[in-house]
Image (cartoon, rainbow, N blue to C red; front, side, top):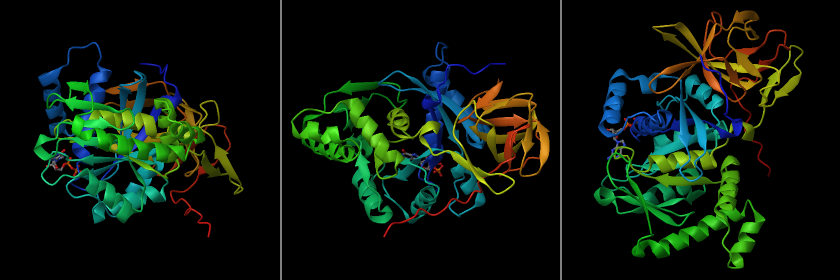
Length: 417
Ligand code: GDP
């Protein structure tokens, strides 16, 4: 049994992959698990074909897409810092179901996947609106850049026209359709060329001559967007001084978390192009549990309380999915918002008014499960041993004030006229 150490909550990203059917959610998720799985097994021989075989097997067994939360690790390719990424499965159907609402409720950010040959379709609009409603900051991934008719600008323009969103182009494509072979990183003013269809061989090169003017144009647009969130950036830019990479990332991150801007990445999940840089984007721009407002709840007297993401605070957790597991029986997937949920402890289910025992705690990785001693504020995992708890129930510590977490419905944002 392993005890969690070393992961600072700042390094957590709890995300969903939001897309309408066929945009490439499954393929993108599989590729993410492929790369994060590689990092997880660092030091082991697990290269090339062997890893692809493993992916095929997983696909056949359907493991990667059935877990309510899959826990993965990702080392940012720029900073080298390892992050924990929990991928929460968001149901793919477009109807406005309670399940979609529940998954939206427990994630802090999302990757919106679009089919670059279609742009924003009416169905992707529905998914986008749901994320708006639950105030989920997003980055966009223009997928299928290898496909005939694929066009980044179609995605960017339809994001503006149909979604009323402000996209910020983070990458420009090198080549198009079947000659699509890399990207220009607008912020860092570098180009990346993919050497193979495993995505394992990426070369950093100079920006190709024919893209230099466009790269400069979009750098300026990016700086303009960033300047809205950091005064120094525009000042520096106007004085001919370059803002630093850190300043730009910080400012874009701020705007993304405020849901005012939406960084756009591109690639082809099928051809293993663009997924690693998308993961860097998740780390750079999507919020950590510390960046989101504290969860609210109500006491028995109807008094409103807040529970900030503090592992040392009183326990507050929400059950968001129940699954039957052939090995351990009933699994209750929870998000811990405040305090620390410990294996072997008793909790109160305040929705049901019942005391329950947490027999074991598990985290699901793409290719194995891990038993853990505790889940701290901001973390997600599965509880074994809860008998009465169902989806939507609140859990607090035994002896803690009996609060019920706010219901799934969130208030409409107030619009100042
Ligand atoms: P989901 O329904 O959103 O989960 O989409 P899938 O991941 O199942 O993909 C739908 C179809 O699009 C499948 O046939 C995939 O092989 C294909 N697809 C996914 N990503 C790409 C891509 O980057 N390029 C191309 N050409 N096809 C893709």
